[in-house]
Length: 317
Image 1 (tube, rainbow, N blue to C red):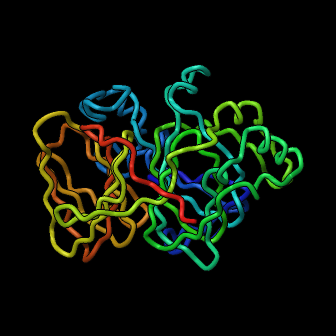
Image 2 (cartoon, rainbow, N blue to C red; image 1 turned 60 degrees about the horizontal axis):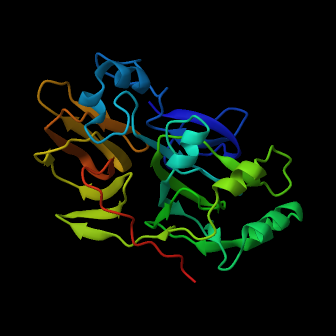
């Protein structure tokens, strides 16, 4: 079940993804595969994803997940109504130094972009740590980011160490390493706690972040392939069958970005899911079929079974 999280930069109107009525505080993030997200139906209803990972280990998360007892990917919807803080995430090495399981490389699929939607991605060429730290003190840090326009269907790669921010007027689907470690460097004077020392230590002046061009493979769009995750998109008006390749296996996450569908596999009850919901396909499942009701657009995320290297991302100038 989706887990709705309050954020000061969020919104109380989550349409067209969710029709739920939001309470007093705005919702900024909706987690689909967090450790505390619960199974919605079937014999495991009410069980958290974290509990299932502990119970089933590699049968659920797969051979290539870095931790046998922890789901490797955190999938979220983001609903920014105001600018998010300028922030940075540590890489795996930096995360280990502070005692957390992994760093945070992420990507954003633009599910919907309204007029003026932008993201801030990396520092302008030539900007140094010293210049950026000075800009933080002088409340001008946002002007040193590369602000780029985004449109429906864009895929944006944000590797760990990239200083970044998200502007208002978009709905994003985020795929990331399962980490929530964030260093807030600058917050437009809103008064929230900053983590300048840790953030400056984690940030890189030059990164591999940027927009990524999709490629068509076997009737599906490969939106992005990286060492940490692969994201595909496909539309279906007829049943689609998937069979696992021989070799290392991996869990898969199916997110309905539009429409609804039913997932069927031998030995399990059919599972239905609607726009804004996710289905986790355990690594041990070798075959499954998606039956659209009546058409569906799906994003499929997984840890790659072979390292494809860093994606060819670029920052538009």
